Length: 262
Image (cartoon, rainbow, N blue to C red):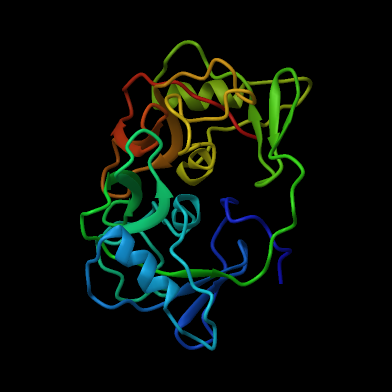
C-alpha cells in the first residue's frame, strides 16, 4: 500500500473497491461514497446529507473540499470525467464541494463532471453530491511551501514549481518547449503541469490572483496552460484562470502564461 499523502496530491489513480459501497483512493487516503442517489440539493443540504450519512460502518462522512473532489477528475474522458469502473453510474452533473468562494459570500465551488472542471455558483442552486471521509490521516505539516529564490516546493504534494511564471504568453506547444528547456539552479527536466497539478495551487480563499502570493510573488491573475488535452477535441487543451480559480479549455494556438513543474 502506498504511503499516505495529502488530498491535494495529483497522481495516477489507484482505487480499492473491495469494500461494498465505497471506493478507497490508495494515493490520497480518502474514502468515497461509490454510488449516488439521483437527487439535486442545495449546498447546505449537501453538507447535511453527508454529515448524516452512515455507510460501510462509518459515520464521519462530509462534503469534500474543492481540491479533494478535483482529485477524482479524469480529463482523458468526458461524460463523465471520472473512472467509470470505480464510480459506476456517475451522472454528468455538477457536484458540490465544501469550499466557499472568496469573493462571493453566497457562492461555493462545484466540480462539473461532464467535461471536468471546477467553478463557483450560488449556494441556493441544486447540484449532485458525493460524500467523502478521511480513511488515512496525512502527516501534519509545519508549512505548505518551502521557498527558494527561483523555485518553490509544495510539501503537501511533493511537487516543485517554478516560482515566477513566464512574463510572456505562448501557445500550448510553446509552453511545452519552454518548460522542456528550463534549467533552474541546475535542475532540468521541468514540464507543463497537468490540470489536477495546477489546480492544487489555487487558493479559493484569496482574491485574484487566487494563489499564495508570498510563495509565488508577481503571479498573474490570468490564464496559465496545463499539459492536459481535452478528451473531446484534438485542438483543445485545459488551462487554469487564476483570476477566478476555475479550469477551462481553449485552442492550442491561444496565448497563455505557463508555470513549469518538476
